[in-house]
Length: 446
Image (cartoon, rainbow, N blue to C red; front, side):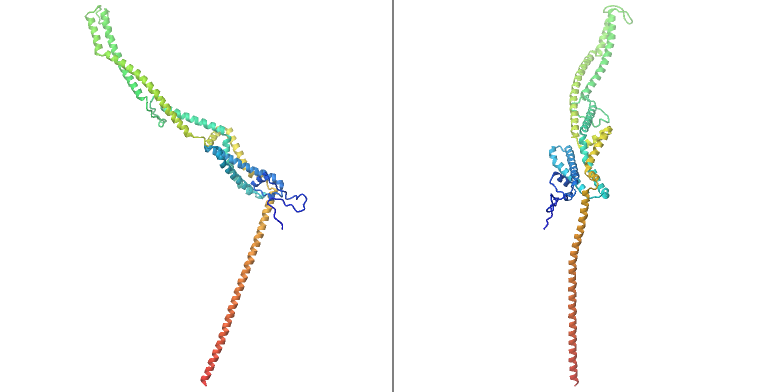
């Protein structure tokens, strides 16, 4: 009894020297595993072993695409999640397995396709590969340009923080003055030890000092004029209103009394003392204002530093969306970066689409022809097997139908025979009854 050879095993007829030329003997190797990824049937490929290198490399392309996909997800997750990259390896490996499985299905579904059907079959698969390629390529693209992207983001964030700090400083001067502008509506600090009160006291004291000084200067001028007249009169100076007599005469004494009375009535000495006290107060208030401004400056600086630190913390870690935005900004400013990032993106997309592209560029191979013929043969065998099963089922049904019809005819015949017997019996009974009546009538007539 002949046994079916194992899948992919060579069939060597008994007595054949050195084995047969076809099918070639299969080997258990890494290349066989790569071909299995591409969905290759080894028992068919054994008939065209020249195709093994082609499909081994096709399986390697599918595997490389999966590795790139896993690396892409690992980069993306490392950007999004603040955990060790080693914890992200299972997710990346799972994604690589998914992509390898999907690309393997895309390739396996094209085996046995002829040139006439390639465009119709490969086009939707190529579109799917392009979509997956865009998804896989973007994290890798950001990783390639990561140094320039991070520098752009750090500079932008630093400029943003500097402008933010400058706005707070502009709206909160150390003088404590209230800056009333539209831009400062949301940039006002509440300082506990504001120098505004000290500034107002100094302003009031300075105004009072200036007013009192003007009055004292006026009184001093008037007193100086009267003092000059009395001095000239007592000194014997000639002139208008002067006697020209030297000594303490009546006019000298009168002029001296007028000057002294003016000084007393105007309270010049008191005003002079008040002016001195105000000057001293202004010196004290000036020192207090300087101290208050220094304290307020430290408080304002500390409050602004706290605001800036909160703003820096709110910026958070650099995410994938931040990187994508920064790459767009770099591309807008530099045509070289724009061209380079699109070249790298297209290269990565082409690499991701390479399994389907490689299969398309291979055309119809000898393996495809054998697969197509085996599929057709399988269809024909299936049709024949299905026809045979249909015939077997039909024969059984026909036999049962004939048996049912035979039983029906038998039962009908039995019914008909019983009916004839019954009619014959009724006829015999009727004839006997008639004879009996006839005999009885004959007796009655006699």
